Every structure is written in C-alpha cells, then in structure tokens.
Image (cartoon, rainbow, N blue to C red; front, side):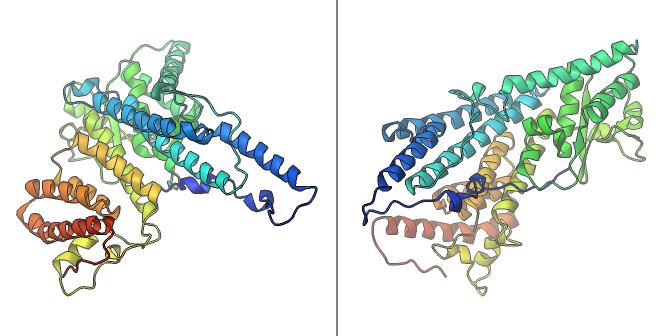
Amino acid sequence: MLCTVYCMPAASMVSQTFAADHFFIRYDHHHHHDHKDLRRWRSRTTAAASAYPLFSNPKDSSSRHKFYQEALKTARDKFAREISFQSEDKDVSLAKALLYVAAEDETFMVFNREMDACSFLNEGINVCSSSNAREWDSVEQMPLDGKTISEWLSELDAIAKEVEAELVSRDIGCHLVEVLQAVNLVLFELRGFKRSPVLVDSKHSYLHFVLSSGCGSAILLSIIYIEVCRWLGLTIVGSRVGEDFLIWPQTTYPEDTACSLLSMEGVLRTLDQWHPIELIASNRDIVGIALANLIRFHWKRASRSNLGLMLTSPLRHAHNADEKPNKIDKPNVPLLRPQDHKLAIMASERLLILQPHNWALRRDHGMMLYYNREYGKAVQELSICMAFAPEEEAELLEPFVEKLHLMRLESSWKSLGHTASVTVK
C-alpha cells in the first residue's frame, strides 16, 4: 500500500524538561553559590559534549562535520551500487538497498541532533543524552535501532531459519502451499508482524524498524516476506494494485499464479479477469515504491503547517499572471519543516537514480528544490524535465523556469550586499 506517514522533527527529540533543569549564572552579583553553579554547568556541558562528539572540541567540529558528510556519501554510493543497472534485477537485494536508505537518513538525523545539542549547550541548557549510544566510524558499523546493517540482514536469515525449523518439526517437504503456510505462521503469528492501519510515524517506513517492531507499511512487510522466501529458495513476486501491494509465488503457469495470489496477510485470493503475470514489479520497481512512499510522507510532514500545499501549485501562479503571487516568493517566510523537507529531497534523489527519465518525478524534485530556495538547482532539474515532458507540460513549465532564472539573479545580487529587488511580473 502506498501510504503517507508522519515523523517528528529532530528538535522535538530533545527533552521537554528544560525549564526544570534551566539555571542562570549571574555575572552582576557575587555570592558564595556562584562557583558551585559554574562547576555544575561545566560538568553538565562536559557530559553532554562526550555524548555528542561533534562539539566536544571546537577543533574537532570541522572534522566531525566532514565525517558525517562522508558517511552520507558512502551510504548513497552503496545504495546506487546495489540498484545499479549494470547488474541483473534478480541480483538486487531489496533489504540491503533499503537498509542503506535508512543508514543515510539516520546519519542525517543524527547530525541534526548533534547540531541541536550544540545550540542547547551554548545556551547553558542541560541536554539529555543516551547513555547506551554505540560508537561507529563507518556506515557498516552504524547502529540502526541497536543493530548494524549486517546484523539486520542476519535477522532476516534468522526468520527464514525459524520457518525452516517449523517445516522440519512437521516433517513437511517442499510443497508450495505448505511452505507458504509456514512462512505465514512465523511472520504473522509467532513474530506478530502486522500492517499499521494508520502510519503516523516515519519509523514504520524504514525496514530496520519494521523488523524490530513488527509493524509497518504494506510494501515493507512485502519486502520482508519476499526476502525470507528468497532465503528458502522460493521466488515471490508482487505488483501494486490500487492502494495495495500484493505478492504471490512465482509459478510455471500463469493460471496457477492467478489462483495463488497472496494478500499481505497471506490470505489466498482469486481475482477474475486480471493477469498479474503482466504486471509483476521488478526488484528496482519495489525499491522505487518504497522511496515514493518516503517522498510522500516527508513532504506531507514538511508542509503540515500549510494544509493543502501542492508541489506544483507555483506553476499555476506563474502561468496565470492575474493570480496573486505565491507566498513562497516572499522572503523570510518559514513554509516547510527543514528536516522533513530535506529527507523528502534525499528520497527523491535516490528515486531519480532508479528513474532518471521520469519527467514527472524530476519536475517534483525541481519543485522541492524551489521550495528550499535552491533556485539554481531547481532551474537545472526543471530544464531537464522540459526535455522529457509532454509538450503541454513543457509549456506550463517554461514561464516558471524563466521566473526562477530571475529569482536566482536576485538571490545572487542580494548575496553581494545589494538591496534592490527584481520585480517579476
């Protein structure tokens, strides 16, 4: 199922009990308690700084920042290699690809949390830190909900071994239906995996958290099912059907496939006058669906304060000179939540690696850059989009891209210290 979910911004992850712990050091009075307050502030700052190494030493901050940038790039590169078109689709590991997605996003959010912690420490505010934080110096060692990428892959192997043990205990062979029944038993009964009815937390859109909590979106539960069956030597295929993602075992004859169609809960279902064999999603398609869900989720979260804000809304304003200008053009108007906005852009960048010629996706990516006021990059993406888009769509984009050129010039002009504005009509 293509779902939209919501997450909490990094700033909200900091303790809400600052008022109780907040104390002030008075420099206009001298009394015998001042040195105690100063020592207490220093001890708190030292403890928090050790938990947030980016700011433990001013000289180390630049190297720590560089470390996070390298970690982000490494995770993206590993994702790109995993889904590379130079390899066959059957060799693409769904689990690895999505764990690299989680690693990149988690790195970004960890960096933001350290930035937040630095700000609070500079203000003399106590920062609650996790005492069981796990040290890591590479993407492979990065903890995702307490486990590394290789450990989460081993978790999938462990689930498959539980299915294998269930089959052995029943003295059952390799009959297709019996294997599927054993998979369903382990996943949905023994392990308690279930589809979240309403996704309100970003964690349900990341594979490692679904493996940990047993609750997630339909597409991620499908991926777990596919990966477990792959370990058992059984090929499971799937397709997006309306708001659902359905999976079923691949068989020799199409009519057998249609009769053994599986829903996410493993309930057998037959659909008349429908030929699933013609709609099978490739592994890259499945990764793409998961990324599209992330884009939708993060964009909705980012634009929550502007109910109904659409990515393409400014195109209409640019094309119709009679309409009032969109408020995004006004400076210093905080429209979007920065962290969710950036996460949506990151998911869009990954999806463009999979679908570089998807003009609608590239248009939406360019519009997200526009909302982020990255006018130069937005012009580049939308110009490429116009080369692939249908003629009527390109005509709609053209006046907006011209407007962006002027806005980029104005932004460059102001960065040089000039105050005059460019009027766009």
